[in-house]
Image (cartoon, rainbow, N blue to C red):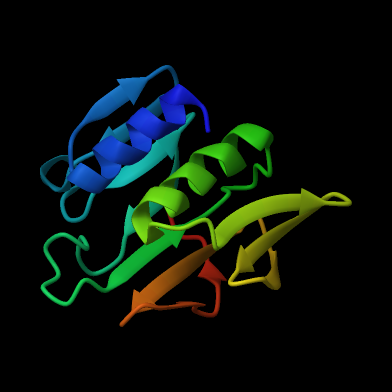
Length: 136
């Protein structure tokens, strides 16, 4: 993990504003709801429903989108966020033969780089919702 990705992931999880190069975190007050991370102006990660530290049950609802860019930088930023949010390395993105693949607990899922996805951790069980079309 690169230092910039670690700093961005920590700021995002703590709900703090941070800008490093072309990567920015926005807090809930700035985004009109939940915080998010943008890379080159594209919203690549955001909390769905509520931030896990505000959720008394510790459930996580983390949305992400590659925004059409299956680049090493986008994957690296998201993988670092996944690692810190889920406190494990069991959730990560990888490119295999030009395809974007999401691994969740050793299960491989093809990712469309234009769709939004929600990864949920409920009572310690991590799973992926069905993708939805990107909006905005």
